[in-house]
Image 1: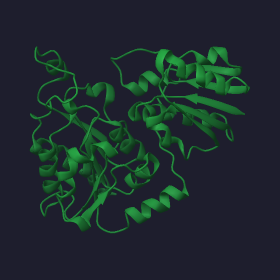
Image 2: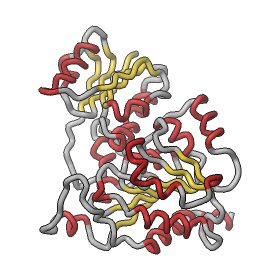
Image 3: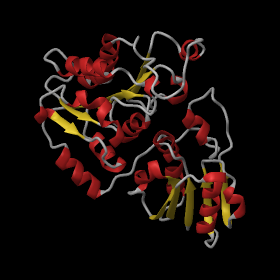
Image 4: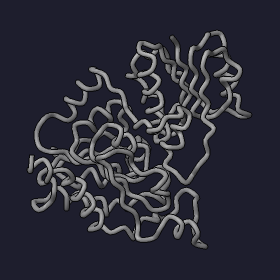
Length: 322
């Protein structure tokens, strides 16, 4: 049994599609899996059960990358092809079962949209696969001890990045004596090229209390996130990775639709600017170019602190009563 899974380049979209792949693995135990994925998200699939190959797709002119993928795959007989990109490439490959995502509905969460390829009643939650190698590395990077607050202070666009100084204020409030995570260590996650813009976050606590995961591979980051108590971050792929890893996740939103991309899961929540998404993007001066000032400045530190406290305390009353 061979499965070809074609998924997204962006980390967030790739993570959100993983529930569909897990549904296939549940349906076909022991299947061999080939994942065709954009280079930015390729490391996400290192620990997929039954992994046979990861094909990292590099975008080329005139969609030549799809022809290259077809050339790689055409000589094999696939039992199932799942095309989350809706490329249609599966129509030119031998397969026993073909699932092509063609749903377009920006009024629902992206997971609901993606899960329509399965015709299932309940959308499958995102997952992230780790193995013993990544878990052991996570034990080294995040040893047992005090609680851990993880933050994702960067974003793929400056407009939806909550100001770094506000993140520092949040960290101080949550890890201080009166905070919900007093004395907690700090884990900072970001892409390698984002280090310069968020470097002041790394010095917001004493060096011995900071876990620097900037630039780490996605599976190791996920394994480390599983050892955290709370993640707070901008709307980003790392936010979705944290939610898939099972850590309590608070997403910060401004110029992106929270109903479409909020972190998915029972232990997740989101908070947005006082202005709605529609108010922000319909403003005459709205600018989607890179380098614009943050549209998140109106989101107060106190508001995020309150939301984080509420999320951390969620379920504790019930546990106490039991």
